Length: 300
Image (tube, rainbow, N blue to C red; front, side, top):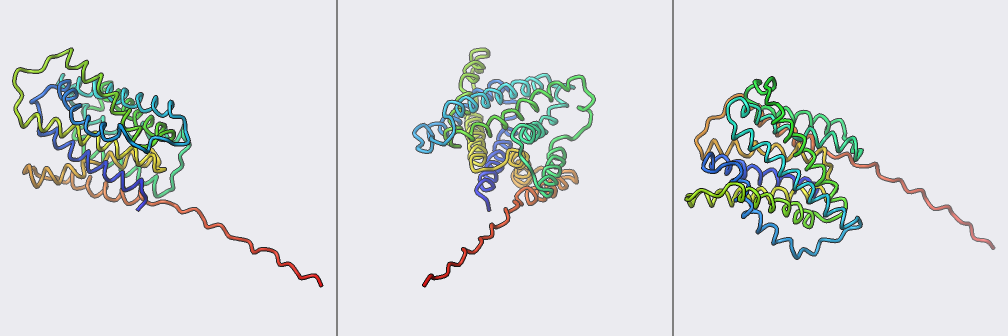
């Protein structure tokens, strides 16, 4: 198993747990407070990389840091649009599931700008993964025809750009160092949200644990993605692969939360597993044939 694939699987598992925790929090916190308090869970991951010795790479250190900061900032702005759509409810909320299609933006940027090339099997895996993501997240087609569609396009574009910037960052610095600066961009946004809307008087202890755990697994997933990028993984493969985290969320919801699985979710799981197999197929370069050294005759 390639190194980038191992880290991609870790990201998928981490974000699956993150999604379950977000579901359990529900409406106990507003979107802004959720974003702000989850920063507490991000801090331990950041501290683990403050003294990382894997911070030097052949690329430009400054460019790598700037790309990572920009990726973190763009990701947070995408969250703002996402949470705003959730808070509005009604027809605005019907388009929220469409934001799960953000890998489309990363794939296009990676193939157009970075000139990434996929094998036919991998390209088929990308298409199948997008269908699986749609089945997991989009339950109604109503959002496609809503005037609120801008609330889906903004996170799709911004989160897709964040994945692209993460890949650019790891072209210059290590995955660990990139993670540190990517997550650092979340801190000022968290402070701003708390300044804009003070916390409620009481927050249950279990909600505190969930929101901190949510931040930790979100950060762990981002770290794993950045290490996968730094391990020569292609953004056009890793992004749709890690976006299949509902394949982890669904079984947990069934066995521990008592939810039922329908035909749609079952088809999503099957297609997700098929796409993982296709995306992990790497074409090995042909072995170089060595030409025998010319024979020399002894001169009498």
